[in-house]
Amino acid sequence: LPQTSAGSREISVLFADLQGFTTFSETHEPDEVARMLNEYFAVAVPAVVSPYRDDVDRIIGDALMVTFNKRGDQPDHAQRAAGAGLALQEATLRVAAQHPEWPKFRVGINSGHVSVSLLGADKGGRTHTIIGDAVNVASRIEGSAPTGGVAIGPETKAQLPDAVTTPLGELHLKGRQEPLEVHLLTSLRRDSEV
Image 1: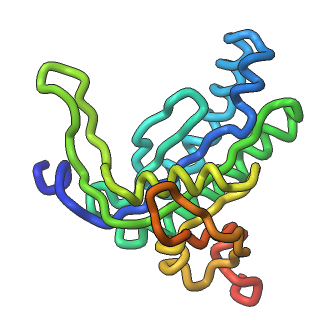
Image 2: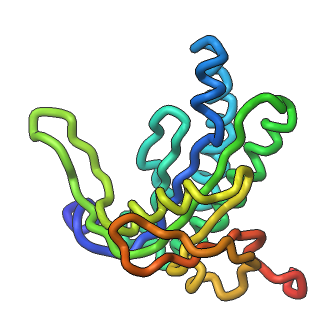
């Protein structure tokens, strides 16, 4: 529908990729790499899709981009994204425990206003996606996340008042005057509330 396929709204976006994927790919046959990716995505995608009603925007190689509130029907998008990030790590770390030589995921989440639109040509190559600084920042946050961890930006953290986090320090982004304070997400609830 036009009201859900395009427009400006606040979303949360999650990026995940495998730390050490390039090195693993260089030292393993393509079919081994594909088997590893399929085994990971077989648990990663259901972990975020089923309980959190997200949109897997794209899978590119070892990278996963997931959006929350793309249709404008998830006011709790930051909570959903954070829960999905923790669930993804929990599911994929179980797989990694069986394959210690495999690379492990790192996750970055950011929230902010974006443009939701169709991109591409009328005659093919079209995609329904999100565009905006919040997306770029989420990708950068993911790049600074520790292996096996979920890093969140300040806009996401502000929407998670009960989350347990640890500061990861300031992230300096090219082209930005002010650094960004990034946190490691441990839990969505404080111990006293569990």
